[in-house]
Image (cartoon, rainbow, N blue to C red; front, side, top):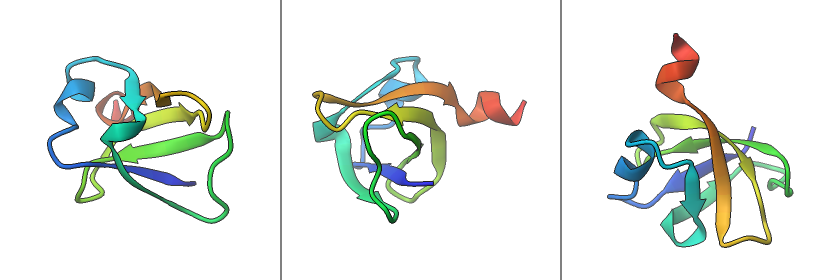
Length: 75
């Protein structure tokens, strides 16, 4: 599963409930093959600690729509 790794300081928005990941908040995307629009991705902070799961969009300024936070998934 591809990982979307966020830039430092960009994680608090999602922990506060915002579901949209702007493309400028992304540091890098790792995984082979790279994600396509509609693929499930794991969103992590800069140290690769999981934040949540979301759907990737390669053509929008919102690159990921977080569907479930990692804390919720663990419960």
